Length: 165
Length: 156
Image (cartoon, rainbow over all chains, first blue to last red; front, side):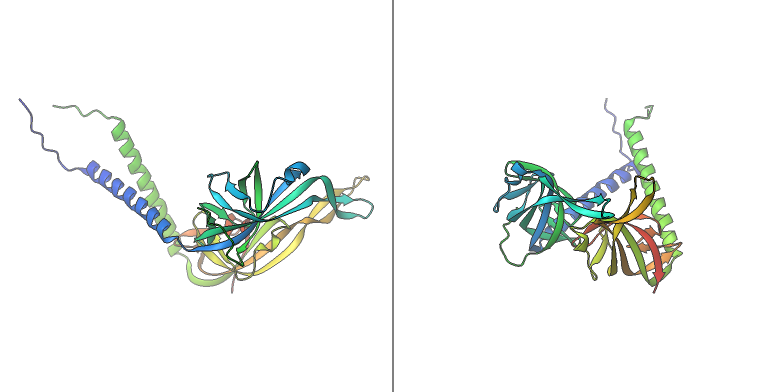
């Protein structure tokens, strides 16, 4: 003998339906937000690698592709490489003030990078990486992986940027 | 008669219910606080940023829009920036300590203009996000990311 149980619509069903609707709305919101963020522009930014040894400073060349260490996405192409001796400020007791000291065995490498960025929430974003001065970024260039800091970002003056995607 | 035993599904649903009620209550409290505020007041607030490297000290400029990191909320427009080198204490061999300027880093005082609802030594950005004097906040402009302390609010 089989029982015919009638399922009564109750508060738990309402909660589950509400949760599913919220999850769907949240997903749709994210998809639409991504679709609408297609305002692209060429940017130029500078990243600084600190405390680079003399041999490692030579690994960087114009034309190198830079990849984000966070999500393995390409975030631009090097258009200029500047290598400077690392400079720190040390107190000089003779002159009674802080003075700049150049280190002969350690270098700061500045890479100027061109990229195509989307404009999201008043930020430059290249393949889901926020590009903004004073931000730390993990980068990979050919034969080299490092944490760097972004020191400057600006709209590019010409259209030499390579698509980051 | 079927005995309805309390199981893991019931526990999950009750937990979700409690979290939803807590979130709604918190939001209601924030909205109530916002309702007690003075509305649409032109203010200038000061954000102090410490130890900015000289490489990017000039990345923030007058006229830049300031937003709150995380929520991407507009927080005003930079109206002025004052920059000074950091001071560092130096210990001399005779045991005295003197303060000297170290040009490797700078402290910035950024004044930001905003029309906002103000209340209780702070102000609201967005619908109900409250920034208080003395609070450390993460901000960004189009070109510069920074963490600073809100140190002052003045009504224009």
